[in-house]
Length: 397
Length: 212
Ligand SMILES: Nc1nc2c(ncn2[C@@H]2O[C@H](COP(=O)(O)OP(=O)(O)OP(=O)(O)O)[C@@H](O)[C@H]2O)c(=O)[nH]1
Ligand SMILES: [Mg+2]
Image (cartoon, rainbow over all chains, first blue to last red; front, side, top):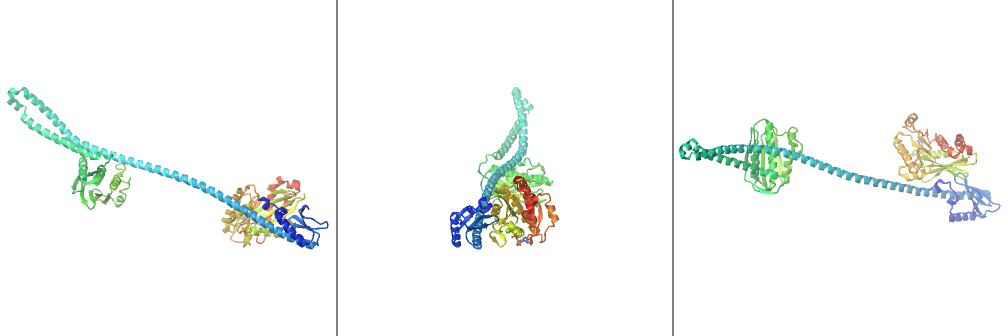
């Protein structure tokens, strides 16, 4: 823009070809004489200067940008020069303004481009950031999921361990007496072998070897052993309900049967002073994941047992089932410590536990509720601090 | 860089600052102060009330002992924030700046904003703000509340730009401000232009050419 804006004005800029012709033509007509326009150095820009011409300078800023020359009276020439100067000044203002206008629009446009580029850059940055954020959130969620699953598995393993201990205890007892029965029976058989040696004195030997007693006691031993074996078989059968948790398949079951299994598995490991009182109402059959529901029942009953333990009093776990409108209701109550309203409030908080750190992960009730909800059911807790807690499950059937 | 064109050396000077700080008033008073043969007409282009929309231009000049015409084309920019494009266009190729601040304490933010805008626009139009001759004028000293001169100087202590105080409305400080700018210009450009060696102009004569 230095051409017009920053340069001092000059005739060539202010009066380009056609305009020069027009303006100078009018000047000549007004002056009624040979009129010429000269540049600052005196060279002719327009017209033919008369030999006797007067000159009048044309000053716009400081120095003359040219001269008007004509052979007329000084005052007349000066008036004409003043008029011409006004015309030049008007041209000068117009040129400067329009030049500046163009320039400022260009500057504004350059600004716009700059802003646009900046916007695009920041949008790109934003996109990048949000993508990165999404990734990080996903990674965090995955990590949390993993942690939770690990905790859950750890809890599961721990309860499996406790379960295994109980079951081992349960099975050890019958196995112990079946073994001892069988040892006795082996001795009895030796006595029968000895009887064969003394068949010639059969009656005396029969007496001496106490064969009558052996026959009777042997029969008892066998009966008792069969009973023991049956008990082991039943325990193993009950355990089956827990063994298929991971390859869960839907089955139609009588939920009472599942509860009986749970009670029977847990019964063997109840601490002293805790008993289970179960009453089963008539239930419709239920399509469900029995392994999962068993886990729920184990969790809830075990919580009850712990709550009674924490109360330092003997107590009862009360299990009731009944058919209700639209489904099945199972309630498991305990006469343990109960929960304060704050504890009740946070009972489903995945990592909340009322017990000391290390004794429980707090996942029990959360997992239980998740499983019940996955069955389309509800799980409610009713608790009074110092009196106990009742967990009520509704499962649609 | 001042433009040397035959026997004429032209400096482009710009009065910059926030809206209504008194840039146009400075130019009008300068026009009143300077002897008739040293100045051209004050050209005021298109205003809205007293608000500059394009620019004002005051041409001034004197002839050095060497015969060189030393010419100053002094512009004002429009201070209103909206006219940044115009401001930038007027600013480009400036050889020196007077920054006119409004002394009223209520205007502090506008002053700061405008000063930052000056630095920014300088770099946008390719001027080295750190090497550019700049004078900072605190105008409207007749109004209140304003900070005392001493306090203003304390706040600006450590900057290299000379500070002046003016009441442009009455003309006080207007010539001093311009003289300071002339001195800064001289110091900046004398080595390149050989004003003293080739044109017989020392610093005092350079100032006195316009403001005797
Ligand atoms: N009281 C007082 N008023 C002043 C002074 N200087 C300028 N003014 C007034 O302030 C108003 C704005 O002054 P201008 O010179 O038009 O301001 P500007 O910086 O050119 O403003 P823009 O063109 O909008 O950027 C006018 O009404 C002036 O009369 C001063 O020293 N004291
Ligand atoms: Mg103005």
